[in-house]
Amino acid sequence: MATFMKLFVILSIFSLLACSTNAQLVNNFYGTTCPSLQTIVRNKMTSAIKTEPRIGASILRLFFHDCFVNGCDGSILLDDTATFTGEKNAAPNKNSARGFEVIDTIKTSVEASCNATVSCADILALAARDGVFLLGGPTWVVPLGRRDARTASQSAANSQIPSPFSDLSTLTTMFSAKGLTASDLTVLSGAHTIGQGECQFFRNRIYNETNIDTNFATLRKSNCPLSGGDTNLAPLDTLTPTSFDNNYYKNLVASKGLFHSDQALFNNGSQDNLVRSYSTNGATFSRDFAVAMVKLSKISPLTGTNGEIRKNCRLVN
Ligand code: HEM
Ligand SMILES: *[C@@H]1O[C@H](CO)[C@@H](O)[C@H](O)[C@H]1NC(C)=O
Ligand SMILES: *[C@@H]1O[C@H](CO)[C@@H](O)[C@H](O)[C@H]1NC(C)=O
Ligand SMILES: *[C@@H]1O[C@H](CO)[C@@H](O)[C@H](O)[C@H]1NC(C)=O
Image (cartoon, rainbow, N blue to C red; front, side, top):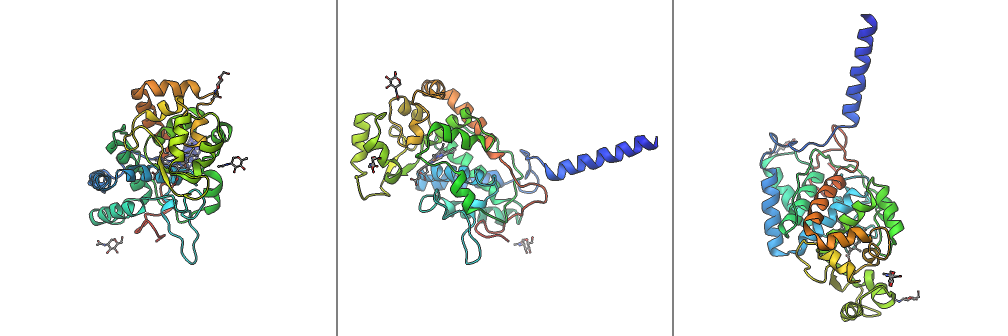
């Protein structure tokens, strides 16, 4: 009996440890503490997208860049200060990451209803989901309970977010480092069915690469000169830039991927078949995208008593 009790105590301690270090995200995390959360996020995203459809894309990208740097912990939202270096000025984000004001607006409204309860990391996850849905894409249930980081890493943002000049092997390795497969890479890249990109990120592709449709290259050169115009914008999806659909894959099959990293997914490599399949089956793309977004959203969250619930998404408490 004594050994039995000892075993029981040891097992209990183990499960307690497991809970505190490995708490899980849950769908109804704010069900009683902030029942209006999802309505607030949806309403604010609806009006933001009405003002500017691109904002749905910008916030989806913010979420990706948050999750790829030490997990989905709201670290990308922190401003630089005299004594704090955040991620906003890392190369992939500087003069490019946008949508922070919308997250601030949502946070202010959430705080007014549910003081000091909902993390900025969870708000970003919900806002990204709603942006996709409001632009015509799928929806999904976001597991919740993330907490906000008290730190950020500019160097990790520089080294762990993929570059538009990457080949398939580099992209696959960088996604694999986050627990995501090559198929996850291909389906999540379908996010490039919405939003805009700067000339400096596709200039080499349109002037130097050969696996590109000639008319498409000519079209893009018209607003992306050989020199100058670095920040001139082009739609990532040339067909329907503000609709979340499977046209991204139709573009790839037609050699009209905007970035080198886009066309890398359809360049006689391992992802060709999946790209071709998504190009002809929008429902499969929608379903797989939703599943992969939930997977992305679960990368290394802070839970339990780790991190904090920030009062202001731009500042640690
Ligand atoms: C696979 C590797 C990826 C690379 C190399 C990449 C690179 C880029 C680049 C260079 C831009 C344009 C930024 C600018 O010109 O300011 C961009 C935009 C965008 N990216 Fe990605 N991206 C990748 C994956 C993803 C993923 C996984 C998502 C989301 C699930 C995503 C969502 C977006 C969106 C929505 C935009 C448009 C943002 C806007 O209009 O403000 N990207 N990406
Ligand atoms: C919000 O919560 C903080 C502490 O959690 C408290 O000090 C503050 O008074 C609260 N504000 C409102 C408006 O309830
Ligand atoms: C094309 O490639 C050459 C050789 O790598 C390079 O020097 C040049 O800058 C590239 N042109 C553009 C527009 O990127
Ligand atoms: C793929 O291979 C085929 C046959 O070798 C070739 O005709 C085609 O140009 C290649 N496509 C790309 C994008 O490299």
